Image 1 (cartoon, one colour):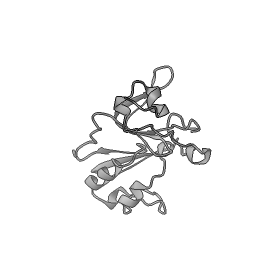
Image 2: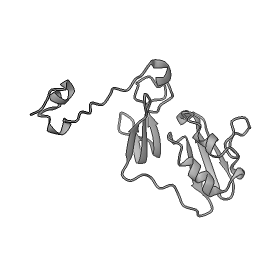
Image 3: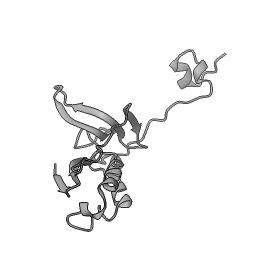
Image 4: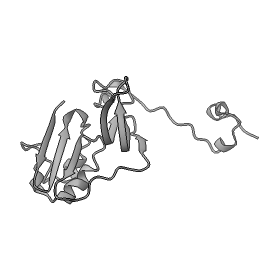
Length: 163
């Protein structure tokens, strides 16, 4: 796990490489700050703190986080928590959360995370993109027009007509 920090007087940006799933949102949104062809790859002076904060808040994995040093607003977590299964990929979670290990000890406190659904990640509970090589596929959700009138879940799954 590699964590790095980059800062100006206005903002500190932290990057945790072990949580990055390489969506490229930061690169496309703010190329003057995030540029993998440069070293260091984050140049915090390349934009104002508000632009950087807005871009970081789009990072689904929480690999990028920030702290405002200029008194600017902190990230506001989603409320209620939002959990979205990404197509054939991880669970994308936004909101104030505490992830604990099997003993109940706090593993991480965060506001954004992508958690493994395929079971193949070497960085559990986080996604490490192993789903791409594993052939992981979503299970289709059963939605039928008569779902609300079904007598039981078995009826919906089997396609049984309701009266």
